[in-house]
Length: 173
Image 1 (cartoon, rainbow, N blue to C red):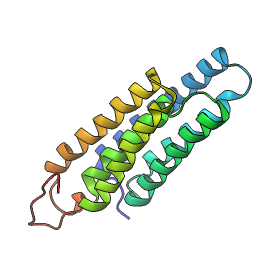
Image 2 (image 1 turned 90 degrees about the vertical axis):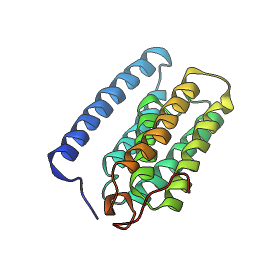
Image 3 (image 1 turned 180 degrees about the vertical axis):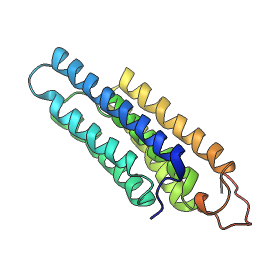
Image 4 (image 1 turned 45 degrees about the horizontal axis):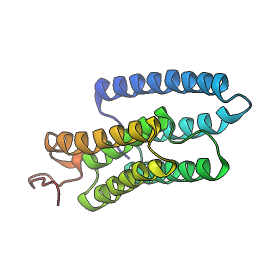
């Protein structure tokens, strides 16, 4: 279990946590205002779980990312079936993008490819309810993670990137 190194990692997580908290609160407010009733509870719960997984990504890299992909996919399907507000919410999509990008940056190649594929699958699944702003935003965020991950991996050689010291990193495999 490797924790974020130095004050930079801590500051990134503090900033990300603040963005998640404010974004989740704003999304809940907007859902209460537009959908009414208790529809906001499901979206808020999913966003909180996804935000927590994104903030815990350094502790169990593979399992937090796999759980994030699974939770988001299940939320998209549940929202479709139960006619809830479309998922993933903006903050859940951001958390998924963070998990996908971080996985590509830090995991060995094949687990990183699996997580990247899962993230792309969730983005594709978001389009199941039609072309919406939520689906477009999810796609843009996940594509951002798919781009940022390899770029950051290229500049982080060594054990932190899941590659033994002295070996080169190639992407795609």
